[in-house]
Length: 335
Image: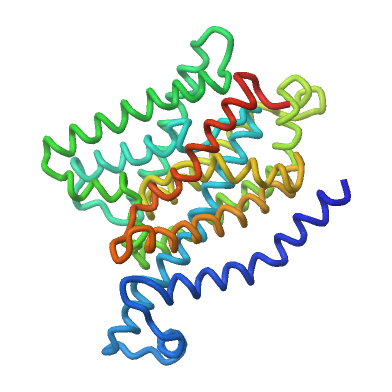
């Protein structure tokens, strides 16, 4: 019990140092290495005519910050979903949340080509809600409840359907190249202006997640126990899903589909700090941000000087972990 208090505190204390180190590496290395002195000058003595300064401020720094934030958002979303459903396979990428977001953004580009950044973020969040509603709705119609294996199957079916419809529509209306951003998760195309615009939404989602942490701990004990302890389970579930929709919608709007972070990281955080979501949620956020920032750097060197899609890197970690969970945990829900 004592270690479950010390370890989270140590992680949170070391997180700023680790984040700064990963930010430095992300800005330093790439197809063109930039000297540390130039990075310093770009930050504090910016020269608009200096190409290195432009690369640092317009490309590498936004994508590094974006990776830290998006990793945190997706990991926290996964932790909330796993706690609410008591399902160890629950995550934004498996439960159709990410696919729903990309689906609605695709149709916004077709039907409303002049949509501004703020509207895209809002539509992305609405699409997240659509994807989750489809999976949960189908799950309620399934005899025996939404077990982990059924969840994976339904999530895959819904995600594949939404992706297929989006791809067909994009091809028919000849906007496949524009839509590919949301399906290939190109962090290098991070828009600094959209990143700033998304921060207020993200702060609302993060604040909601932290305020709900204690309730999620109770919900993870089961609906009957939670109701017996005075929880308004229906309202809490709506608020949890709202936090997930906001955080996932913002993530997809900024960088497209990124899988497995919401699945892997909460399990690692749970191993380190136990089932108390007041510790698990912030630790998941920290580990998720650091993990995606690390993957973002790794993506530059797997096939250097070409950049590997970030989804491929996260899948290298995520697929084995997914299979490990299926093998070791079977089809039941976590305690």
